[in-house]
Image (cartoon, rainbow, N blue to C red; front, side):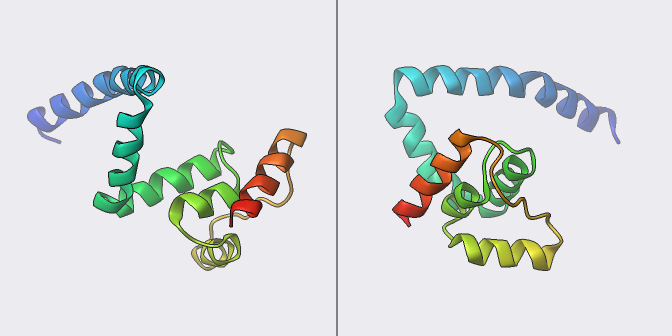
Length: 109
């Protein structure tokens, strides 16, 4: 890795958490701006969006139904995709809140 690449990577790793905290603040003050960002992000960077959503799913930050919603797929379709790709399927909910969230997501679909 070149010195310049290493400097950019170090700079990004130091700056990214700060920028993400700022996005959270903007979301509280001007949620419409963040909504527009997330309307564009998946379309402009679909591979990165998919990576982010799958990462959130694997970290148990979102469930399969929410991941499917964010990726514009039916939960069964995404489940089948995950099986083909060797991504673990997390079955069941860990809490009452998760169960309610899954029910609400399915009502939307």
